[in-house]
Length: 544
Image (cartoon, rainbow, N blue to C red; front, side):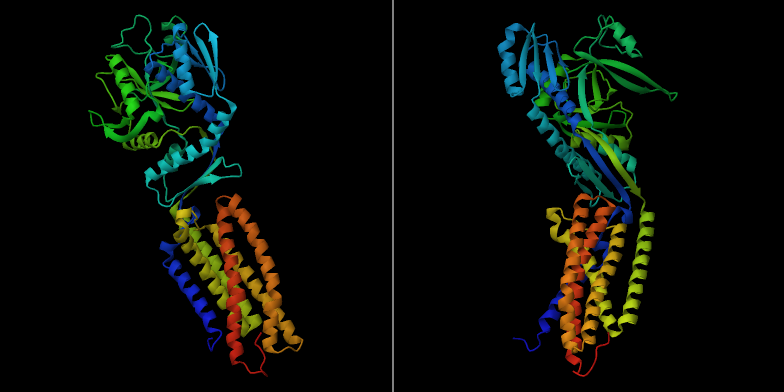
């Protein structure tokens, strides 16, 4: 046994202080600052899972049409027939077995019904609808994470939020172009190649649509073919005006968003920015067949979401293309070409996303917040320190030392948690409300010392010895301190789990500070009193 029973306790305290110093300094490198201190963008987004059904039906419509073509099954059109149903029209009665086999393989488990006269109806089952809605949030989260990673943002926070898990929290430190970020977060970027439906008597080699939807429909005798719908293209004119034309395009796309393997910014033959893309092996085979069948004819490049699609360009196919192509003629700048390639490369967002909360903080405002927060914290600490020294005399020094260590341990924990638990995604970030939480922790830590000191005073007034008064003071105050801190920690945990942004920053600092105050007020402060008791004579009083 050690001759000095306090030795191992002070060794433990020294080790904790050393570790706290290691993870606290230098603060700029060790402590992650929140957006309100570092500057950047904050978005809280709501995933509209009900719109995921529309996206899924569009995907099935395109994929099923491509599958029919691959299997040699003729059809006139595949059309929406309600919220979660499709009608396949114009099939041959002789191909009923082939159609049923393809449907079983491609949409097995869906409700299938033959309506006669070559028409079939398929409907998405309710269990599959629920699965699509649940997966929409995870897919959207993964897609947004890929897009943000492509921007090279350091230490982004991208995670689910809210009780129902249908919200996504995105925090991007250091981002200074929120408009570009919002476009990357919200734009589904569904790219499709569609065949043009030419009106009777048109020359495919040089035909272009007239301005106005009615003029295009009139070319088809007033009614569009059932397998065709209109898509707008906005064309910039030399005089700065914009002309809108409407292209009659096939409903079923030759290539859809998930057929892309890669996309990169490149240049066209004139050196202007463009976007090159690479298709999957299966899509490349389909595209090769489609471009061979459409040599000398136009095919349209369509970009958008399930409810708002727009033609980027409609180039004439000059040669057979397999799995590599280029998107040009879209009036790209270097940044818009980069952004489009990021969206295409990361994949389409399979639902609509609404931004519920948006905050942008500039770096200069963040620096001002740091200065203001540190000034307020320093003033609070000095005020508490003076009160403890004046009111509790030499015992106040004990409380000041415990307070200083408490702040050090908080900063040490903020620096250590991301390092120790980065693989688990556990982060600790200092925010402006977090500084407020730190100031509150100082007050609560002092409150613990006040409880102990007042209890020691009462014991001394009862005539107890200094040793007995200190023992009784710490022993009787411990239960009250523990109860108070535990209830506050529980409340802070709920704030951390269910709160966002400033609320979470406040809660994280409060939790760490309360745990640290338990260690400093009860353990460290007690050992400092033990040092004093070793040197005090039985007839001496305690400066308290």
